Image 1 (cartoon, rainbow, N blue to C red):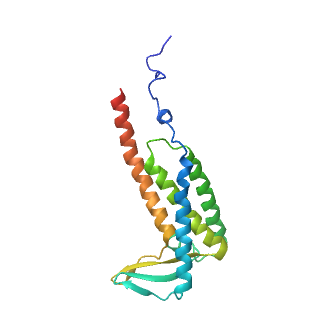
Image 2: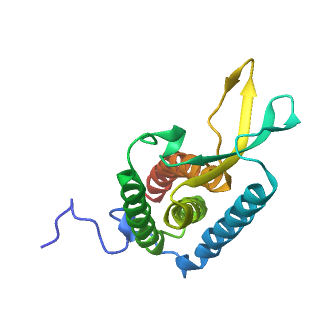
Length: 185
């Protein structure tokens, strides 16, 4: 006996019914590119800039080499050192979880296929610094009217862009899926 409320095998009943992306882990090249660009720029900054000595590039932008033992905005930077390992564990755990997520993405989640590797690459770029140096190398410094935004690096840019894309995909993707589901009924 057929139940009218049960979806047939021809109609998608949930997001799992959408086709999975073919070879989604191929997008990890983007994470590798972020890591490479991040490490190269940090090496150049570390070898060419004096510590905490700003080099004016524009009236609102300096290159300033700084070492951050904390997280974003120097969160927990003043603690005695345990935060290095705490943030390393978070970076590894997040990278593994995001890679698993990437392996399971659907065909219509292309922005997600870009967002996740950006975050993974940024997390692993900063992880390298934490493990090798004990701090993260930051060197991009924006300021205005005596107010300085915390210095950051290429890995931080990738994490931020990935997070924005992730939020965008969650909002726009959900609308797109609802519209497609409505059109298929």
